[in-house]
Image 1: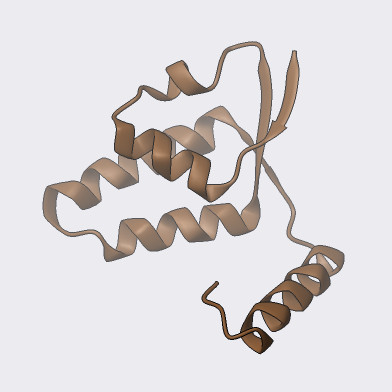
Image 2: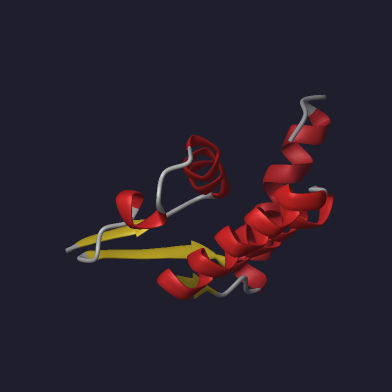
Length: 94
């Protein structure tokens, strides 16, 4: 069994490749995502239009059925804030 935390980029790349979720997350894999990843995926659903929105929503629903979601607590939020501030100070996009 493999313990993994999948990030948004991994999941978006998998969706865009057309790969079936079962092909990228094995039955024996112990996969989780951060709750912030859920928010980022849902932004993609909201910004999509027409048929693409429905396909993305179906994909996000499948992800949420397949993986555990890790809490975004205050400790994680503090680290996230530090990273966002450092990126802004450097003048780099997130």
